[in-house]
Amino acid sequence: QQPVQSPQAVILREGEDAVINCSSSKALYSVHWYRQKHGEAPVFLMILLKGGEQKGHEKISASFNEKKQQSSLYLTASQLSYSGTYFCGTDILNAGGTSYGKLTFGQGTILTVHP
Amino acid sequence: DTEVTQTPKHLVMGMTNKKSLKCEQHMGHRAMYWYKQKAKKPPELMFVYSYEKLSINESVPSRFSPECPNSSLLNLHLHALQPEDSALYLCASSRPTILRDTQYFGPGTRLTVL
Image 1 (cartoon, each protein chain N blue to C red):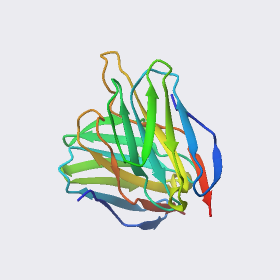
Image 2: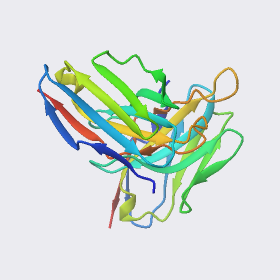
Image 3: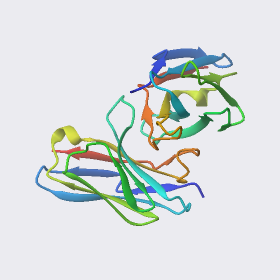
Image 4: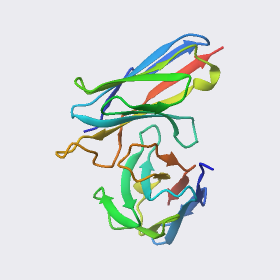
């Protein structure tokens, strides 16, 4: 049930854009995106909910295709501070149409931004 | 205040020791979580507490024993651990509305089992 992220790693120069994808084999209630820097806790970026609601940072955008069970995170005009490992966490839709109440994280995408 | 605190930051223990990890939040969140994270791997859910009751146990070995004494505090009691249990242990909290809101993570406790 672990979602699959792609690519595994991305190298950018400052100012360039990147897209990170997250794909699930199960129908999803929500997708959560986090960034983790080495030795630190994961930091919340974005939640995308079944039905179209989104909550997150102004400078980061994401999409959630419920039919395809996929989400994408869009990082535009990247900054050095964007470097880190990006995780998507998925909450699977239960038989009652709501949440199981737990996140399963993808394997992560390592993003490196160079000056 | 969106802070989750964890103590200690680092812990080294032998396989016969008993120790505890502590997690605290004062955001009024009623759901709290323990995750285990090995190097270069994603966090793996261990336990979920909702309104101070254990709601999810991801088949974690009994040498890990969680406890939620009140709505602000979460403990993880450790006993007879194995070297492969060495990892970063993360605590998180959220409003309990079935994951419609973010989980806030603490900085973690880095555990080494000798």
